[in-house]
Amino acid sequence: MIAAIRTRLARFTRDRSALAALEFALIAPMMVTTLFGSIELTELLACNRRAENTAAAVADVVSRDTEITDQELDDLWSAASALMYPNSATPLKIRVSSVQIIGASDARVLWSEGHNGYAPRAEGSSMSAPELPAGLMIPGTSVVVTETSYRYTPPIGVFLNIALDLDQREYRRPRVADPVTRQ
Image 1 (cartoon, rainbow, N blue to C red):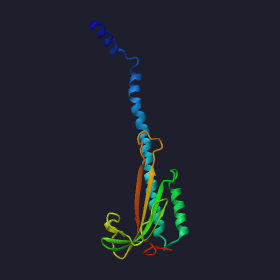
Image 2: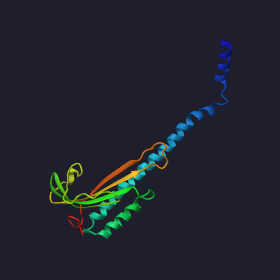
Image 3: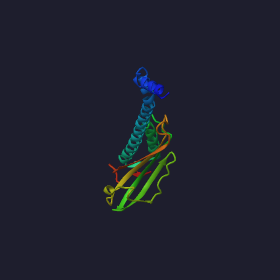
Image 4: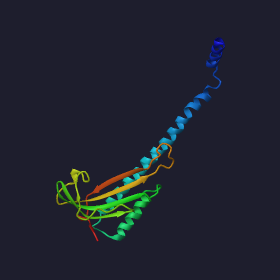
């Protein structure tokens, strides 16, 4: 009995006819998971980059103006939606604020506007570190602060099966008028 089992086991270890199929069966699930995981990670990083670029673009446009009107803000929100393509702009929330630096550790919000459910900051509210980097805290100047929040849901959901919040914050010094005012 034991000799028969040994004989069969020895014959099985010498047989190479189905080895490639066995190796493929063992490796294929890992390769498919790695493929889908890399696709999802690449898409997550691309979406994060789009949200970051959107925040930078809105901050840059506002910092180049002297006064922001309602029509300009509507145009900014539309442009920001286009910058998120090919991702949906529906989960994109944006807030832009003009902040006056009072002292090395004190800054006040002059005006703030939010879009798509992002509440504006209260006029006159305080901002300080870590919301504003120390290098920006120069008394007598102002800063345009743009914040974006994007609720990212993976398109495949194999590797990342949760929704992630991609939050970005960009700062720009006004270029024409200091501070940028709100009509």
